[in-house]
Image (cartoon, rainbow, N blue to C red; front, side):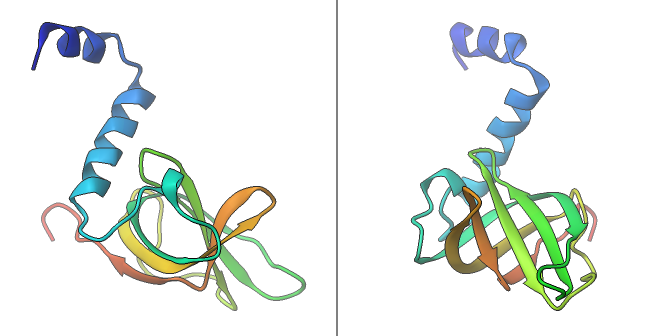
Length: 122
């Protein structure tokens, strides 16, 4: 690591450090695309960490909504007809796959396939 890189790391905010770590983790996930590069109206696979989980009904239908962060951006994952899903909790790493669309200016995937990543020690 060069002196410039070390100084940049020392001066970086916690959010910048976390974003760098998440980008590095997402790059290691084979076949995954960074969130900020996801093409709309195409299938994609992403890897990241769940930042939040919210129960938010849509048109009277139960819907579980999770924000997946990979260091480059946030992708909204929505499971229709679900109130909760075991393992989908803030802080959990996962891979998700599905059709990317734009909803209210945010990249969103409805009913994605997903794979929970093991936690340290699992």
